[in-house]
Image 1 (cartoon, one colour):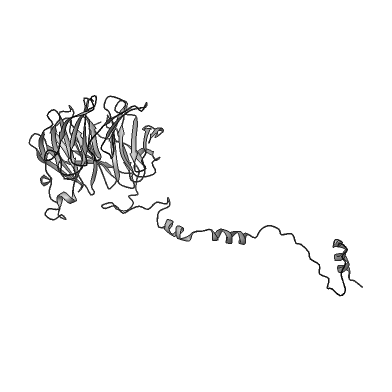
Image 2 (tube, helix red, strand yellow):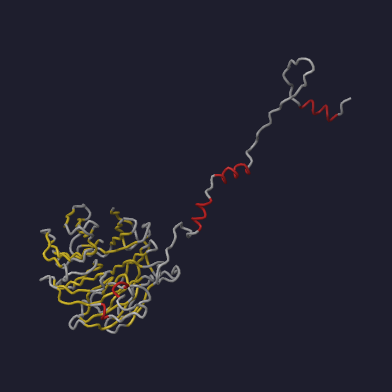
Length: 389
C-alpha cells in the first residue's frame, strides 16, 4: 500500500504521454528542468577570459589617469602642493607649450600644446570660445602670427581666417615677434638666421646670417618699447642686440659673462646651457636673459655689463618684464612663478600650483593676472598681489 507521501507526490506529477515500447526495453523518463538564472560564477569566468593582464600591468605602472610621468631633471617629485590660481583651463590633452593674451581687451587667452591644438578662451571663467587646429598676437589688430616647421611664417586674421604667408629658408621658423609699430616682424630660424619682415609687402627688410646671425637655432626674440632694438637668443648661449633700423648687431651678451657653474667642465657651457628667454625693461636701460642652467642675468644696456645674477633651482623657461616697473617675472621647470626686483636682484615673491614644469606664461597689462601653461595639461590664472599696488 502506498504511503501518504508517495500518493501525494504521484498526484502532483503531470500525466505522461502514452508511449509504446517493445519487449523488455527499459523505460526511461527524461524530464527537462527549468534552466533558471545563469550562474554568476560562469559569467565571471567568461569575463576573466577577455581580460588582457599584460595591458593591465602596463597601465598600473602609470598613474590613475593612465599616463606616465617622465622624470624631469631638476624637478622634485610631482610638485603637489597649494594651488593659488583663480582659474584653471584643462581642455588640453597633453603638455601646454605657449600662451598669449589679446592686446586690445586682455580678457582672452590663446594657448597651444603638444596635442597640436590651440584654444582661445576667456580669462574670467575659463570658457572655451573657439578652437584652432609659436603664435603671437599682433599688438594693434586681431591678427595671430605663427611659424611652421617648413620655415614659413603665417599671419591669420581672427575670426575670419584670412591669412598671409612669409616664405623663409628651408628650415623651421622657431620664434618671432611683431614689432611695436605693427608693420614689421622679426623671425628667428633653426639655421641661426634672423629676418626682419615687412608685413604689408611680405618681403624681408634685413637678413642676418653667418657671423651676424647665430651659430645654432634661435630660441627667443624680443623688442624694446619703441621697436628700435631687437634682442635675440639661441642655443649657442648668446644673446645679440640688433638695431631694427639698420639690421646690424650692436652688442653681444656672451655666456662667459654669466658665472660658471661648478658642475660644468671647461668647454661644456655652450653644450649644457642655452638662452631660453629674454626681454627689455621699459623704465630703465636693462635687459634680462634667462638661461637653461637656471640663471637670470640682468644686463646694463648702456655699458653691456652684467648687473645682477639671480639663480633658480631649475632651468628658466620664460621671463616677462612688468610694464612701467623694474620687476621681472620668471617661470621655470620647478613649476613656480617668481617675481624679481631687477634694481637689486632680490626675489619679491613666488606663486605655486602646478604639478609639473611651467612651459609658458603671459602677464595682463596691469600686471594683476599671470596666466600659466604647464606639463600637467593645465593652464592657470594667478592674481598678483603687491604692496605697492
